[in-house]
Image 1 (cartoon, rainbow, N blue to C red):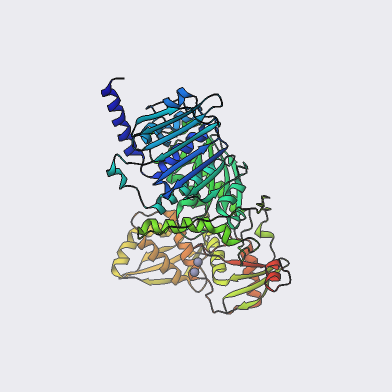
Image 2 (cartoon, protein in one colour):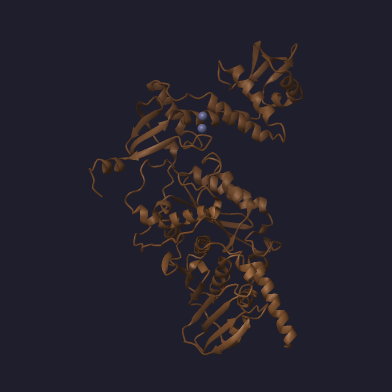
Length: 583
Ligand code: ZN
Ligand code: ZN
């Protein structure tokens, strides 16, 4: 190669590096994905200062011979592509074939690799070969990256603080471990162990190793297929919620992906099981024909486009919804104390802390990462499909005018009477609103409804919408309507109030009016309005009726705003609290 050609190639590498290495974890990702492609079963990632000082990835994969090792540092060397489907991910998932040369052009790289036959050690700095010699005969590859961006200081300032860089890598390795539960991952920063999975090939066990027992114990398994997609994974019970979408872990053909539609399907399936703006922990694995994965997306993003996304949306939505529906989801009042919560939550705390500092960018103090070897066995039996509908709840009384105390042979329950009735009413109204043949009450004496002049005029245009849901109104003098019919489900004695509420909702939602959303809003608003408030003492019979109706709901666990309706103190919890049992 002529000198000029070499220079331009090096320049191209530097440009590519600037584009694709946005953070230390971009390098970690490329190196670890190479290890995965080399069929490693053990991958260790050692960072110093979150990767700012050093990134080291050691694997026990197939390793390379001398020729391949040198080829790996040339642009577009594709010797590492083993699987057909990788070709579809080249453009979407990273800069494969350009990874090592790009990294080596802006840093110092030491590669040691052996395929068992021979062993090679290559030392490169700024794209220039410093040395090449034989190395130790350990099968596998080890790559160390130091002095990142030493020759392009302008890029260096794009890197974030140590905490943020560490956080990004922890986050990435967690997802890689979930994508590949058969691989043992170890991640350290400044010689402190942060993350370790055992490569058990058991997804639930991997979830446990990453999230701890408190979360892994509350996961529900799911599995489903359509013509084009197989989905499998775990969702958490709605009592576990996070304030960001980071734990919506989605994978297509074992690759980490981010996709708005996938997140939307998950979020929609949890509708009313959780408040808006809170997100569950989900591990969703999608397998599909790689040709359905669109490649036309920016290389550094994990975003993808999928053909037949509507089919996939429905499959995910229905499957998660049914999984929630088919499981008993009453949260325990007490945290599970049989496990060491602190130990389990060490990583979660670090990650959360770092997520916070990420946005603050304040003075960074060094976080000390400590995680002990976890010996606890994960309980991997699937939670029995117990439906709430068979649950008997016997009211004992009402506390604070707000909470019904109930019991059965499993323990004591506290039920928020407002939230519970809100749920019952909500489902009743939704059902009535969805019904094809509306049940309508004709009023012998019409209700006179006086509105403001502006509301009167707006509604004049929208009378057909109201008629759709059973409210027939007729103009009657100045700013006044006569209501001649209303849907039968309106609570007796509250008809006028309800109709006024519905009119308010109609007016407030007029820009981009959506009938489904309108119905939803009516059901939620009226359910809240028409439900018993706190500090209202209901009789024993009324309590009984409320509980009987609650257990028959599709989602008896949450009010339509996603707040819990019921919590449980199991007999075991009570015995532990009263020290009747000592473990
Ligand atoms: Zn309410
Ligand atoms: Zn509510």
